[in-house]
Amino acid sequence: MIKNEIRMMIHCGDCLDKVAVNVGQSPKKNTSYQFGWTAWGFQVECKTCDKVILSKELLPSQIPSTECSCLGCKNKNELEKIN
Picture 1: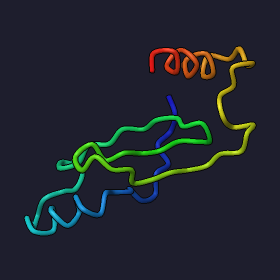
Picture 2 (picture 1 turned 30 degrees about the horizontal axis):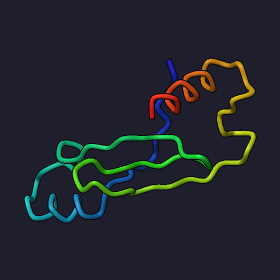
Picture 3 (picture 1 turned 90 degrees about the vertical axis):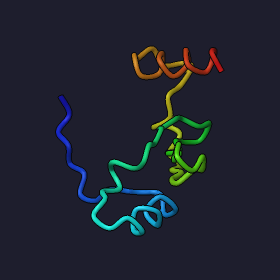
């Protein structure tokens, strides 16, 4: 199992504004995110607001490749076939 080393959570600004109106609510209970690979890295999308809240460009060596046979690259390539 991978150790959780998160130091600060990232939240959608629009969702935080809505939570601030309801004092005492946690952003964790009022938001929903999905993570996905792009051609150049990855993005995190707020499903509640239907907008991208984080985009990260990766080095070419960090992006799953069609030429690589590791499980991570195989899984990404299978997902691309579906879409």
